[in-house]
Image (cartoon, rainbow, N blue to C red; front, side):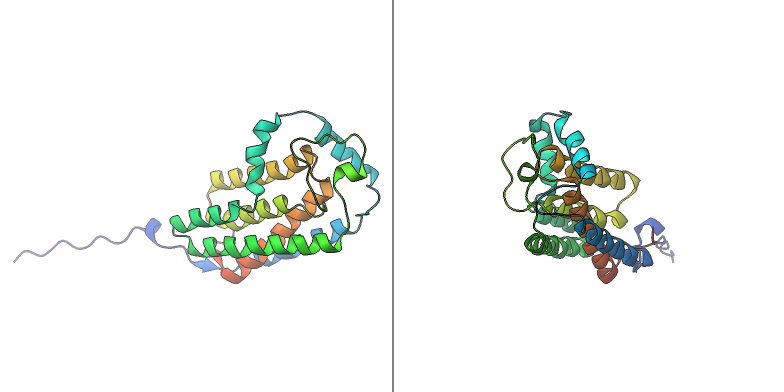
Amino acid sequence: MTTPPATPPRAVTDRPRPVMRCKRDAALATLGAVVLALTVLPVDERSVDALEADVFVVLNSTTVLPFAVVWPFMQLGNFVVVPVAAALAAVCRRWRLAFGMLVGGVAVYVLAKVVKGEVVRGRPAVLLDDVVIRGADSLGRGYPSGHAAVTTLLAALAWPWLGRRGRVLVAAAATFVCLSRVYVGAHLPLDVIGGAALGLAVAGLLRLVLGRPGPCS
């Protein structure tokens, strides 16, 4: 009687990575909340600090790329990207990530509106002279940047699930969106820093609650 061949053991690389909750996720949420609070302090509804104004002028006045090139990549911070990113995560069977992106995307969108209602700050053209507006004028209050919040949230949530190249890509995308919002004249530097901090705070909290793949790195 012939003995059937033994079933080869499952490859280690095929095993799902354990879901973990790491101290650095709590630290990320805390850091985001602290930076958000710190960026609120110097905000004034009638004026802009000299240092912030100087940084804005450097980023806004120098033509680096044509608006036609900047605009499509800047939309990575648009709220519409949230369901698209969640769908991609679901296609890859990253269900926790997909759920976190949907919940986090809605959360930062709503929280950004709440903060805008409390912190009175106009757009750069209202507070500064000679602002270069690229594209359509942005309406409403400026602090914090919703685009910066959304793109930073998505990047921070995806970070533990990505390899080195993926992390470089999402970090570059988030940085580009933040800088582009200043470049087109839609936000002042503290607006995008505050928005990015909001995104980090929500992402850290969600990573702590929902868990993320190990190890904690």
